Length: 111
Image (cartoon, rainbow, N blue to C red):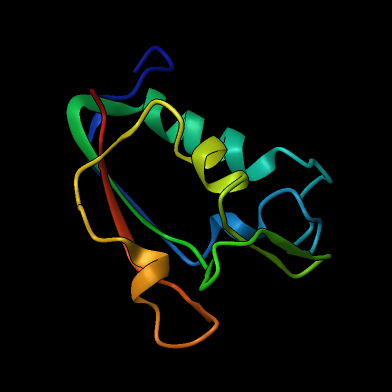
């Protein structure tokens, strides 16, 4: 009511944010669309709430853009995507990948 929502305990994003801002699904082109989407998710998550984020990650932790299909997250874009979230799983995801690219689950807390 009054245009407000109650904050969420957890936000789930599974294989979606890497497409945001690329225009593939009718959205406006925005090079920061993915980063803005995760920042907005933080705004509607309770303090102490969680984000489970599944994005494609490159084994050598390189960043790639396959316009207008998707992004692969690496050492440059991944920290921008997850700014202001505290990662609570300690696994080194890129180092543990079996193939050049996978989509592991990253877990964060809104502190």
